[in-house]
Image (cartoon, rainbow, N blue to C red; front, side, top):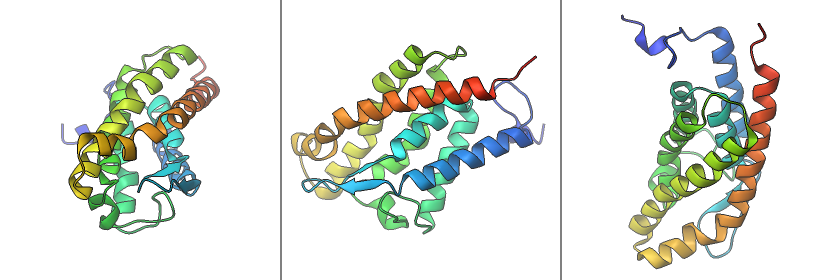
Length: 189
């Protein structure tokens, strides 16, 4: 099976429709990253990108989610200005917020794995809020602590606490959008 990487989690070959959805999700991530603003006491930005990443996890199967988010991170890593604030390059990946970027493909993959097959706002919201939000903070917190040489408490103050209320609201919005998109694109028999 030399084309195993072209198969989805259910064993089907990736279709043109799948590739189109993946491309649209990457474009959504790129555009949403420009909707961001800084907080004065942290190097992290408040960004709409987390909405797009969660929607990606909710509308694509796990394998395609991982590939899509990894492709988005790769685009930014090679220098395209697709990261929050219109930035890109390895400096962002290796900087204080680099753990967010490196963690996103795995976090989104996990969200996609546990979202279930039923299109349900409650389930999507629970996955986004209880899994996506905390797991996203893990990578960001680790990189913040390592790069800025701060302790756990300082890292939590800079990378986690200020973002919790907004991230919960963004996760709920992403769950709503994910349900709507999945209902619109559900295969009709």
